[in-house]
Image 1 (tube, rainbow, N blue to C red):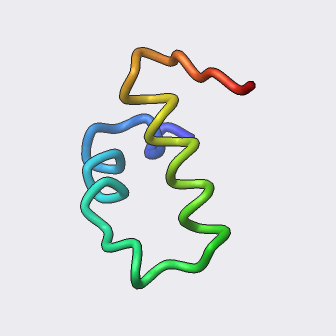
Image 2 (spheres, rainbow, N blue to C red):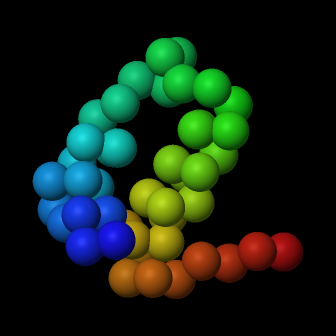
Length: 45
């Protein structure tokens, strides 16, 4: 899990083109990027 907290891992996920990902990958990337980019704040209604 150390790798998933690195800046390089974040930038790799952020730079990936959504057209090349499966629906599940898009959803997991969205949750991960949302959680890490907004200081860990993740709101679910």
